[in-house]
Image 1: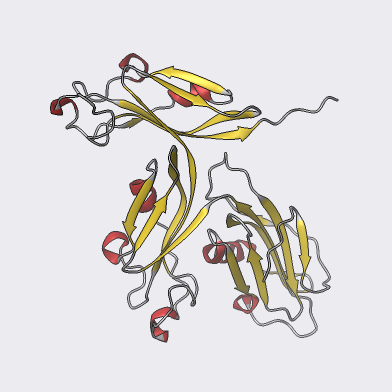
Image 2: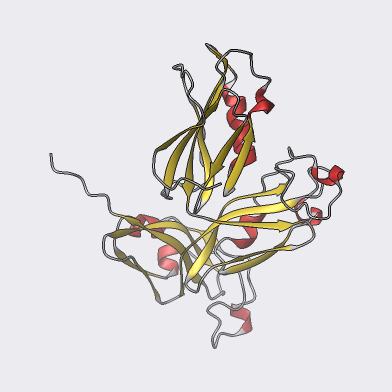
Length: 317
């Protein structure tokens, strides 16, 4: 089924009497600096039992849910929102079986009204026992928005698997381990296994899903200068900045081993964001006097991940 790429599109699966009520909204798993590609509203009702969400590019983030069981009866909105987000967030396509919310009342209007956004991200899936390979182009770094190890449907990673290993589609297990391992790197390999993530549902064949984006990445050695730059009409938004050392190879040229051996001394800093956010270009000196000295005797470097956002011009009154 084709997606709709239009912003604020209203898709009606059937003519339905819409009753006014509050809409349950949710927090996004993507950074607040990310801009949605599109926002779509899908209404499914009266005998149409499957609601289809789809992003032509990027990944789904469910924004709000409104659900009625019949006429003026509104079901628990918060529970429905949680259920749909667990099933759909981070995917490119998602089918929601409305019958999971109960059997329709004969002759009564029952509908599910879902609004979701498509955010720019790469969607990666690795079946249990294999490796997830996250990769960005040169000069960019991985920023993990969301990761889940478990099972959210009966079709993903199902080939040649017996039914009892894939029938549990209610085993979401969000994890921060992918972000901890991969954020800030240009490439990253992580094993999709119980030994890494634990086993949220024994007996079920699981998979690792990751939604990530590639952002601008710069490294400046101690004593040099970090230069951040965006194209005309765009401004810097710093996503992360760390000063110290977390490997023995970066900024290691002609440095004695004693200055490179401590790879556990990288500390986050807000000073880059304070100096550079909202500017088109920015230069910042990489000095202990600027960031402090987290590990005396170690030769350090500044690592920054940032994005460039469009400048929003205010209209004249």
